[in-house]
Length: 376
Image: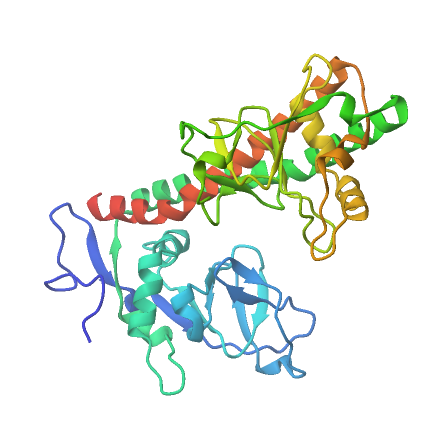
C-alpha cells in the first residue's frame, strides 16, 4: 500500500529546501511495559487528550504503563485522532487496548514537534485509510512506524513548538480568567439586589415592532438558549413581515425552553438583523437610567429564567409574554455602579473572544507549522 507523506525517491533524499523526510519507525519504539504497581493514575485517550477512563478492569496488572513524553493512542479510533502526548504524568497506566510508543532519538526528534504532525486532520484521515481489520479496523504502532515525516533541524523544531505552545498558553490563560471574573460579576449583581431599590422593568423598556417591509435588512437570525444570536434555522418565508432588531435592542423567543428553565433572549450588537415575527423585540427607553449590557446581565441570571418558566402560560407551549416581562422587578443602582459591572462583563467577553480565537487558530496552526517545516 502506498504510504501517505512518502517522498517519491529514497528515504534519505533531501527536498529542494533541505528538509529530510524520514521513516518514523527509525525514531520511535513501542513501549510494552505492564503495570506492577497500585495507585498509579489511570487515563483514557480521546481527540482532546487524556481523559478519565470510561470503565475500569478489576485487574489492572494487564494495563500498559506510560511515562512522560510517551505517546498513547487508541488503535481502534485513530481516524478520530485519539492520540495524546503525555506531558503531565511521570508515570501512569492505560487500558491494554491502547498502544504506547516513545521517541528513541530525542536529540533528533522532539516529541512536541511530532505531536504537531500527528494532531492534524490530514493524519487522522490517513489513519482511517490505512487501518486494517475484519470486524473493526485498527491503526497500530506498526502502521505508525511506516509513515514518513519531514524532519527539520532541532532549531526549527523548537521554533515551531514554541509558536504552537505560545498560542495554546494564550488560550489557556484567558480561559482561566473566565470563571473567577464571572463569579465576581455575579457577586456584584447580588450585592446590588441588597443595596438598591427594586423597580418594575416595564417603567424602563418599550416594545419595538419594526418590520422589514422594504427588505433593507438581509441578515436572518434567531436566538438560542445560550443567549446569543445565531443563524436562523428556518428563514422566514415572509421576510417583509419579519421583525428588525437593531443595536442595543433585545429580542426573545416567547416560548420558554429546557423544561421551563431557559428563555432564549439576547442583546443585539453589530449590524441589524431580522427575526421571526413570533419573537418579541424591546429596547430601553432611556439609557441614562439603565445601560443595556447591565440589563442583559440581570436577565442572564438563572433566577430570572426560572421566574419566566413559573410565569409562562399556555396549553401546548409555555409562553412568557412581554406584559409579564414588564412586571419583572430589578435592582437599579446608580449609573456608575452599572458601568463598573459592565466593564467587568466586557473583560469576561474579551477573555472569551481571545480564548476562542486562539483555539480556532490552533486548529489550523498544526498544518501551517508542518508546511513551514517542510519548506524550512
